[in-house]
Image 1 (cartoon, one colour):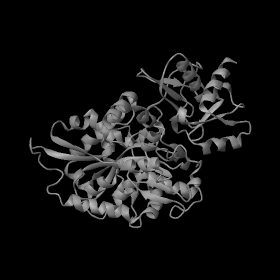
Image 2 (cartoon, one colour):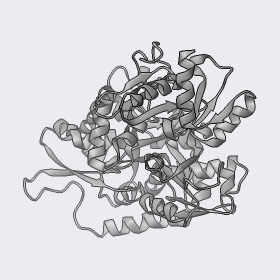
Image 3 (spheres, helix red, strand yellow):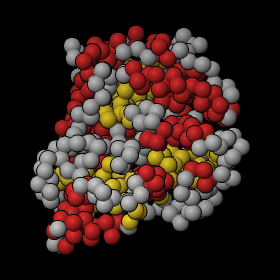
Image 4 (cartoon, one colour):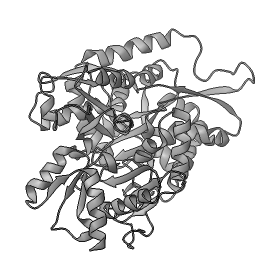
Length: 475
């Protein structure tokens, strides 16, 4: 769709009409200003945006030498437009917007940008999803054929939709009508019935499901294609103010470490700043959450970025190919990171892991493919669960004693995507070990695929699973 690039061009022209430059003298204190563009509600970027801003680490790293102006947007397009116009120095956005950013800037030396770090990623693609209304009859993506799907054109959510439709044997250009809408507008359109599906990036799908306003019909992890968000900087600015970029990247590393060590506090802080429920933020950013936070530019992420180009070309006919190897430059983050960079860039283990002993089953909770967590009202720490079945037992015990569940998280038995236990589709497999008898899935489609391969297994309701899990513990 030409609208992606036309919108960026119009925004850039408007930004260019403004007087001054991003590194202008502050009216009050005479300090130069560094402008950071971020997306507060795109919580996969919090270590370069919302959380970083709240912690004040960037300002501390600058040591009072500059003023920082934070500019908040819903998507990456306006950030790119203002970077083209020289009005934003550093920005964070998702993989598809990163490609658009590179495409728009690489031919103009004054506007050229470089990808300098990552924020959060999911190696299977779980940060983007498609949801439908709770009452929808759609069980698979193919069921949306002939309908309207809301997506932000050129976003990571849109890219996932295009790839997923193609995998499902549908033509993204003709079999569904993609309605270009900002995330909040699309969410309202889904509620009103003006669209039948909603394809978006973190944290919108999880938010709507948590609020009982949507049901997951496609888990982006089913694509098994990495997705990530990253940080871009105007190359000219990086050369003019290398001290500022180093301060930013070191502050981002600090914020990443804080998130790993204080995941609950980080989720609560982001929730307070954005208005998002802390339970939704934690789903993505908590221990073994959907997002893994790591600033290093991994080869698998860059390969996925290159892979995404053909899909972006099908979305926007004005997209010009990007030399990802030239666009990505890890020399800046490598310097900020230190000697362990080479070792850590090769690793993909989430540094925020679920650990501890399961209270219901008495076994360690350490396998990310099975471990979950229980967040009870009035508690500021989450209880680890070794398996989804053990988690069900913990929930039953807590609620029977008068406790209230804020959220309970389980990994999809096939994709590993963490999801809300009471929103998951549960399967009972009598052939499995007693502590692993109940298996959660993010979608009905995923659950039925498992049942098809396991004839004795059957889909069961959440309440039924709760009761049966407790009964199994007593046998």
